[in-house]
Each structure stands twice: as C-alpha cells, then as structure tokens.
Length: 393
Image 1 (cartoon, helix red, strand yellow):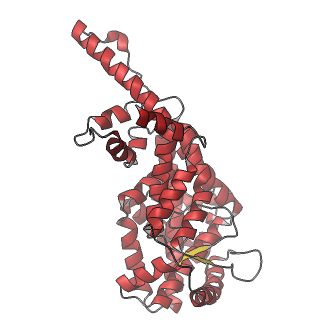
Image 2 (tube, rainbow, N blue to C red; image 1 turned 90 degrees about the horizontal axis):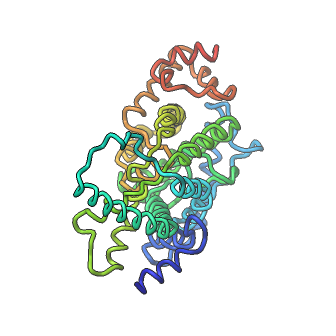
Image 3 (tube, rainbow, N blue to C red; image 1 turned 180 degrees about the vertical axis):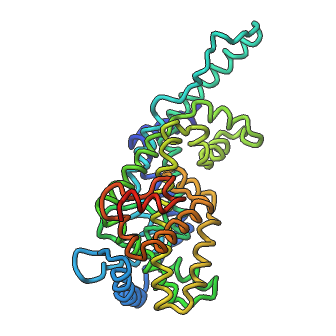
C-alpha cells in the first residue's frame, strides 16, 4: 500500500501527461545514460553548404519555396538529445489531445443486454468481473499521466536513435522555420550501408527540404494537422485493458514495482481496442493524403538525386527498406498519430504520382497544392484520372 500511495502522489501532478517523466526517459534512451557531445562545428558547416545546393534543386523541381527569402533555410544540426528536446515540444499538442481523448467516455457494447439469459452463477461471476473492471478503471485513471509520460518518453527516445531529421514522421511541426538534421544517425546509417557520407547528407537534405516545402503550403499544413488531431482525438478508453493485461502470463509478480514496470513498459496497453468508429471513417482519407505526400516527396528526391548524386538509387533503396522495417515503437507512434502506411498504400501512392506525370507531366503535380481540398481521396489515389478530372487540371 505505501508503494501505491507514493505512486499516486507522483502521478497527481502535471495534468494528463507527466512531461517531466517523458523528457527524462526520452533523454535517457537517446543518450544511453551517458553524456552526449555536441555536433562538431565542421559537420554543421558542411551540412549547411550542402543544403544550399539541395535547396536550389528542391525549389526548381517543386516550384515551392522553403523559406521566406531566396536563401536556403538554416539547418539546425543536432545531436539526439537536442532532437528529443525539440520533438517533445513539437508533438506535445498531439499527445495532450490523445491523453484527453482516452480520459473521456469509453466505447461500450451497443448490444441489447435485456435479451441475455444468465443463471445465478453467471450473474455472480459477472458482478465480480464488473467489480474488478471498476477497480482497474480507477487504477488506470490514477496511473494514466505516468503511463502516458513513460510511453511518450519511450517512443520519442527510441525514435531519436534512428531519426534523420524532423520529417521521419510526415507531419507539420512548429516552429515552422525550424529544420532539424541529426548528424550522428546519418553518419551511422551511411557507414552501415557503405555509403559516402556527403552523398547521404545530400540525399537526406533533399528529402527534408522537400517535406519542408510541402508543409509550408498553408492549406496542406492545415489540412494534415487538423486530420491528425481529429484522428488522435478519436481514441476512446478501453476500460478492460488493464484487467486483460493482468491475465497475461508473466505479468503478475509478488513485487509490485516489478509488476508496474512490466505494465507501464508496454505502450500497446494504452490503445487496446480503443479505436472509435470516427477513426475508422477518417483513416482511409488520412491514409490517402499522407500516401500522396510521401510519394510526391519520393518522386522529387529521386528526380534530384538522379541529377546530382551518383549513388542515389542505392540510398533510396536503403532508406525505403528501413521505412517498411520500422520497429514496434516506431509503429506505435505512427498508429497513434494515424501516419502508419502499409507497403500497399505506399505503392498506390507511387502509382498515383506516376499516373499524374504520365498524363500531365511533372507540372501536373502542382495541382496537389493549387487550392485547399486538392489532395486525393482514397478512390482517386488508385485512379489518378479521377483526380485530374476533379481538379480540372
């Protein structure tokens, strides 16, 4: 009981998410509990010089701007801990929205219980289960801020170990002028795949700058941000999740601290069967929009890489293989934000972009950003002719 009393006291602060806990765990994961050195100034200079060239090509191919001036954006070359610091701040509104959504009204079974015939034993058993579920609901409510803090920290910390920049998750971020680049992850990936580091840096800068240009389009930024917020807000609590988890072999332990660590260390516990009908209706629309954007960026990167990077095809294959082989932690945050795309969805997006170029040339892709609402619907993603007809391009 003293353990639970102390736990309750620790969980009574900071509103729906324990942000201090999230930041501490994320930093610990990112640095492996060691002191992380700053980025070498020579690397910062080299990346910014490459960015000048990359930005010129991105503006030329896309027809979009990456900054308010004619100069390339300043690239903030960071280590993993600084990436964590900025990313937690950028994603805070989404995680807070999620925390609010799962504290609301749970999804209930709409079946007609009056038609259920139960004998006395079944009624007694149901009463005991309901009491257990009520206790678990109260415990879950008390634990929720810390559970969310630990899960958010774990997810962001794990992402920091592989993130190249700020658009590994294709989502607009604040502040709009910021553009992050994680030098260490770029170098480690290049070494693992025997890729020239300068070529790797250039390829990634083209990708980041292209995403940056797309998300600077006001209508795109608003449309994607609002859709992701709607998806996150659609989650509902699963009252029975913790009770179900306690029935999993290996969870129960005589040491309550060990038991809590096992429970709180599993981020999937937060979701359970908590998807709502609203999310199911929204998901195909969000998937289609994100597929189109990701595939457009892939097209632009391949086009530019073919001009200026001799190993562009090798890098593209390596990075995109990494995309479909994401870890459980990566997939969880992608699913939470509604950004997890299957290989089939990416293939459909690539086919959509190719179909537009075949029918209208590369200039036809500009129709994606011409006015609000021009991103493809699920049906249009697999039939680019329908999209061209709708936007009258």
